[in-house]
Image 1 (cartoon, rainbow, N blue to C red):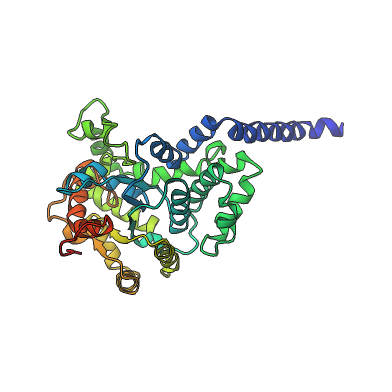
Image 2 (cartoon, rainbow, N blue to C red; image 1 turned 90 degrees about the vertical axis):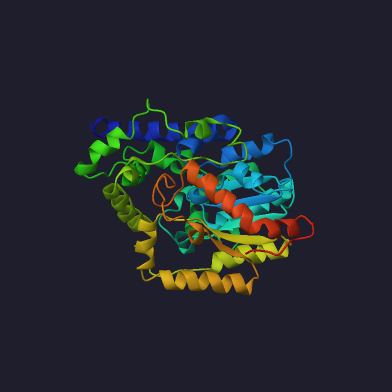
Length: 382
């Protein structure tokens, strides 16, 4: 009688343990399974490492490390084409949800496997100055990808005080359970779906018609050839099409409100220690660094500039730039008055915007790149 009462629970437990064992062994033995789960989790690092391996020359002059703003914003082909008389190979290592501790580990991995880049461009953003954010799931997946590729990173990660404790715990637990590692995919209530809906599906009723009209996959847009051209994406750039919310002024305001809540509304203080650790590491490796702030839509920027964090953010970046003698380029300073068609959402660029600002960035760092390549440098405009 007692067995019959608990039989469903026991069967469920046995099924869970068997499924966990099967999946855990599967992701270790079959890399394609692991990579597919990573892609579905929005972890683009396996894809980018594949692109690095497929590149005829793995010695890139410029590496750009950052978050999704870099991932969508740094159009490597446009950047390289805007450097007249210079043969420069660049690679976009921007990852959605990344943080400076992940970027530090990425760079260490890259140096040991491919050698030192001649320059690192490093994203500067308000949300990167968070100390122990709640959104650590994706950075931990990225760290796990690097550990799967190179177990020599274990002491580097677990003894590094700049890597958050919640990420270290995530890495430890995920070593024993692939179900735990990819729980946002296998969970009946997917948190990932909730996060996606925050930006793409939380439309007021008044905007739903505009969203439908601008989200018809059968209607081609001028950006389609850019998005579909694999040659443009060969060095890590992931172009991002415009969100339906950007089709109307009301949608833009709503997108900015949601982005404020996601990125900085819950932050009480900014922490620059991980950025400084990154700069110290680059100095030890003798790699020149340029800090780059990607442009934001005016609607988002206005909200951030009114926040309690804005003064400390701009002041802190200026102080770090001076202390470590690294150029700081804020691409908001070069944003045109008319921004229609440049922003996929209030934080990310469309392909048109990415090409424009990548060309602007190339002009600003041209002298710095010449210096890094050992060529006589013109007056540095930054």
